[in-house]
Structure formats: structure tokens, C-alpha cells
Length: 96
Image 1 (cartoon, rainbow, N blue to C red):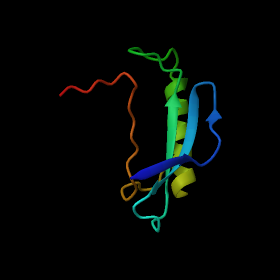
Image 2 (cartoon, rainbow, N blue to C red; image 1 turned 45 degrees about the horizontal axis):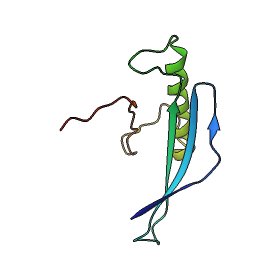
Image 3 (cartoon, rainbow, N blue to C red; image 1 turned 60 degrees about the vertical axis):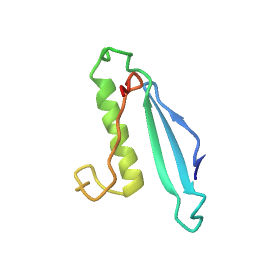
Image 4 (cartoon, helix red, strand yellow; image 1 turned 30 degrees about the vertical axis):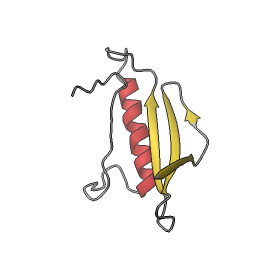
């Protein structure tokens, strides 16, 4: 079982909320914790597009910044060996 605990205080911009968690594996306490960064875009309307491209551009910049914080890589670094960045919307439906 994994445990997620907040690592630092949430930061909030007008369009985004950034949360940082450390996830540990309770079955393997000797394993190093993993850092998970969640960036919530609160200014993207459901089933629509933002009024300005700045919302998307700011989101991309926030994701790049989070990537640099975790991996110390520049934006142009080869990310092939790094874990993927997952993006989803809250209005996604799963159909089985």
C-alpha cells in the first residue's frame, strides 16, 4: 500500500493550483519516496476552451517548471529516460 503525504504547501496562481506530494510504499519502507506534482488548471472551462491562449501557455510553463524542479533538466533536455507527464481533464468519461 502507498501513502501520499503533502510535502509542501500548495501554491496558487490565478489560473493554476500546484500541489506537491511524497508517495511512499508502506510495504517497502527502505525505498526512497517519489515526488508527485499535481498542477490543476482551474481556469479551463468544462467542455469549452479558455478565452485566451495564455491559459495554455501558462500551464505549459508550470509543467516545465515542475519538471525542472524534479529532474533539474532544462526544457530542451532529452526526456526519453524520464517518467511521462500525465495530462487529463476533469470531464473525462471512462466507458467500459
